[in-house]
Length: 217
Image 1 (cartoon, one colour):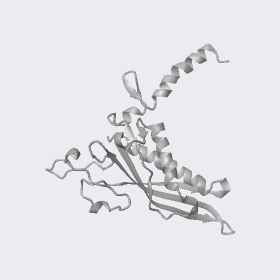
Image 2: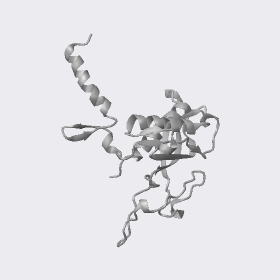
Image 3: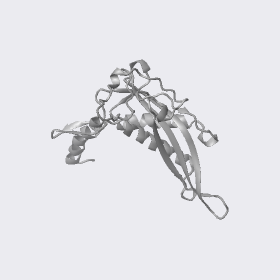
Image 4: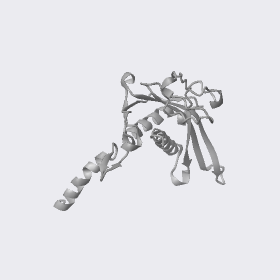
C-alpha cells in the first residue's frame, strides 16, 4: 500500500500532468503546450493524405498510417482537437506524400542488405476554414517601402495536392505546401526491418507537422 505522504504527492501532481497538454498557470507563468498554439483555433479536420509516390507492396497504404500517426500526435501533444465534421472545423490539414525511397548504404559479403535508409517526403497545407487564410504559408517579407498584404483581404486560392506547382510559379497569395522529410534506419542485424523504419518515419513526420502548427514567433 502507498504511504499517505506518497499518495498525497501523487494526487498533487495529477492536475499538473493532466494540464500539460492544454497548459496551466504556475506562479504567473504559462506552463504546458497550450501557449505554443493559437488559442483561437480549437478543432482541426484531417482528411486522409493523398499518395503520389510509387507504391510497392511493403508500402501500400502508407498514407493511412501517416494520417493515423498525425491524428494521435495532435491529440497527444497539441491543444487542438481533431474532428471529422468538416462543416464545423476551424481549420483543415491537407497532406500529400510526394516520394517514398529506400536506399542501400551497406551490404555484407553475401551481398545482402546490412544497412539501409527509408526516406519519405510530404507536402502539407494548413488552412483556416473560417477566413481562408493559409496558416502554413511562410510569413511574407515586404520589399523596402511596401507593406505586408493582409491575408484576410486576399480571396482563398484552391489547393490541389494532386497537381503541385513549384513555389516560383505560385502567386504570393496561393497555398505554398510545406515540404517535410523524415528518414528511418534499416539494420537487419539489429532487428530493424522495413516495417520498423516505416513506423519511425510516420512518427517523425507526425511530430514535424504538429511542430509546424505552433504559433509563429
